[in-house]
Image 1 (cartoon, rainbow over the protein chains, first blue to last red):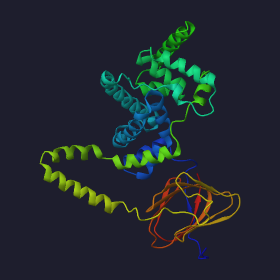
Image 2: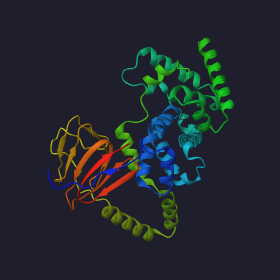
Image 3: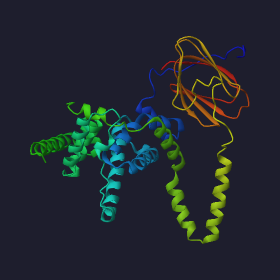
Image 4: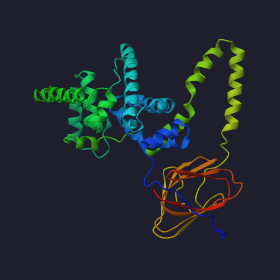
Length: 194
Length: 166
C-alpha cells in the first residue's frame, strides 16, 4: 500500500442510517443511492407480503412494481415518515391486481393464484407445523378476502395493527374487527374439524 | 402482539434471499421508466415493420454500448475475502486488503464496511463503522461510491481516509 499522506477524514454526522423521511426526500430528488437504500430497507417486507398472498410466480412482479411505482410517486407522499405503510398499501394494490387477473385466468387454469402457506416452509420446519399450515390453507381459502388479508398480514407476515390498517387502507377499528372476525371463523372451522 | 403465530412465521421462508434482492433490484433498474417507453413502442409499432426494425437496431446498439460487460467485477487478491454485493468486511485489528485492480483498502481496528454493489464499472460500499483508508487506483475502469451516513463520496482515482459516524 502507498504511504502517501491521507486526505482529511470525511466525517458524516448521522447517528444511524438515513430516516425514512430523509430517504423520501432524497428519492423525490432523483437520488439513485436513496432508491436502492429504500429498496433494501423494505424489500424483504414487501416480498414477504407478496409471498404470503400470492403464488411464487407472481411475487417478483409485485415487488418490482411496488418499488417502481413508489419511486415514481414518492413526491405525492404527504407524510414521509409513513413510508412503510404507504409501500405496504402499494404492494397490496398490486396483489389485488394479480388476483383480478387470476380470476379471469381461473376459468382456464382452475387456479385462483392464492399462496399456499404449507409450501413455503423452510427446510427445518417440523411435520406438525407443516400439517397445521396446511389446515390454515384450507380454512383461509373459505374466508372472504376482506378478512383473510388482514389476518395474513398480522399473523403470517408479522405487521403491526397500524401497518395492516395502512396496507388495507382501513381504519384501525375496522382492521381489528376484521382480524377478530377472521380469527373467530378460523377457530370455529378448526373446532369443527373443517 | 399476541404471538401464538410466531412459530409459524419462524417456520416460513423469509421474503427474499440476498441473491433475489440483487436480481430484483437489477430488474427494477432495467424497468424504471419503462411504462412510457412501452407506450411509445406501441405507437411506433403502428408505423410499420421498418420503423420497428429500426427501433430494435437502435435499442440493441444503445444497450451494447451502455453496458460494458467486459469489465470484470472487483475482487480481492486474497480469494478467501468476498467482495460481492452483500458481503461485509470487518476487522478486529488493522487489516489491509489488496484488490484485483491494484487498489487497496486498509481497515482500522473495528471498522466495518458493507459492499452494496459490485458491477464491473461501479463499486459501491457503505462504511458502517470506524475508519477505512481507500487507496483507489487512478484512471481505473470503475467508479467508487462510498456511503458514510448522509454523505456519498464518489472516487475516480485518489487516496482518502474515510470515517463513519453513524
